[in-house]
Image (cartoon, rainbow, N blue to C red; front, side, top):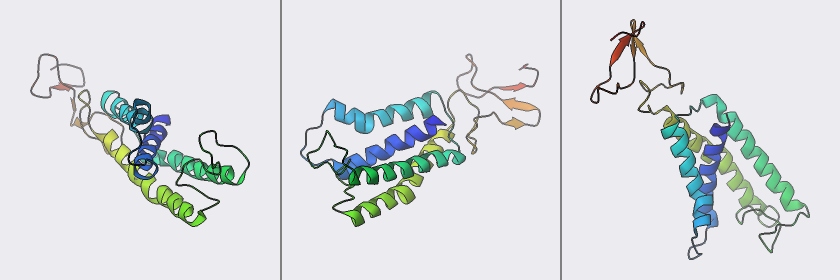
Length: 175
């Protein structure tokens, strides 16, 4: 369940940073790229392509709960006296969420993130987790990565000796 939360959150952070918070002309450093894109790419590569971690639709509740909690925290942070060590004007966490000075704009952005961006990003993550990896048999829409059966024949991954076609074995393991 953690992967189904972390990957979409990293992608949302990347989209929002480069789309809303980054100012053209600011220096682009390695650390900036890794925090706002590199980690998301590595998570996607590891979870979807290498380890084939399934994401299920019912796990969307984790992402939506986190988005609601983050928006709630940003409101509490804005109206509290908690200092922001990264900014002189410390009533916001990110420059685009200024609940004290721009409440309407902040509410619109939060609603768009919660009701448009997070479902779209989660759908992308879910769909990319459905892709068959080289060690699995077929695309499964439930994200389970279970092999399909045709009658009593189970479709199996490529054999080491066979490079151009998928071999078939029976339930007893014979070819």
